[in-house]
Length: 368
Image (cartoon, rainbow, N blue to C red):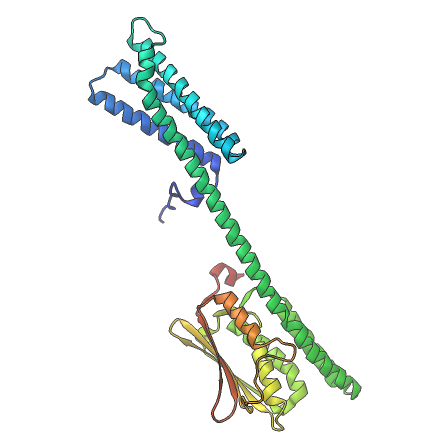
């Protein structure tokens, strides 16, 4: 079993715990500085005493940068001009303090009369400034990077929430429309005193609603689940149209677990009932086909009705919910990676073709 990969320095998992990341970078940075300074001193032929001075210098730098991190953290809450001015002043003061302490420690080890020596201070101030300025640049650079990443995460989260809200709105448009038609049919059966058929339709309606409400409005379902939902819906419509409604399904078993937005096909079937079954005395056939084509799923819903005429089209259902709703839901779910086409068959009939990527549910979700 392979060991889990360690997160990189500039990867998000590394910075998920900011305190841990800071201490790791602080330790690694000053350890590297100590090693480089020691190697450079050894190459220049300096004694062991000089190495002790370098160790003390690194410890002093480590402590000063801890103080700088606290001050910089406070400065970041201030206006930009105050931030810049205070940072420059603090960096200059810290450089001077670092140079004085560094020169004093070096004189204590190397000179017979230790003390503050102006020449030593001037000799170390440039190096100390470069070290602290570099550390400060890294500090602000990393924090700016983290702020940008956090804003990107927030934008992605807001975009996802907006997309989910729009999907939910489009999905909720379907229920009132379907309920209106079904309850109207039940009311007609009650007026005709066909109570047995009205009770049967109510029972099937409750089963359909229970099935559809079990899914989140923005959730994807398998094609197999979508087909079962369609069959429940068609059982209700069969109570109205009886033998005039002749549905058929041809579902490739390989696409049974492919994912698509819930209740995506129901408006297409309802559209076919409205424009193909209702106006014809003999009714019509409604064919639902789903097949696998490479890594794409192709779905078609067609009927044997009158098709399109110059004076009549099928832009939507009676409440304005239909083809436009499906186009919007496909665009929200798959972006540009989909195809939605309508066609009128030469021999009569109307069809809709949908082409979407073949996507399976995550194994953990599928198991649930």
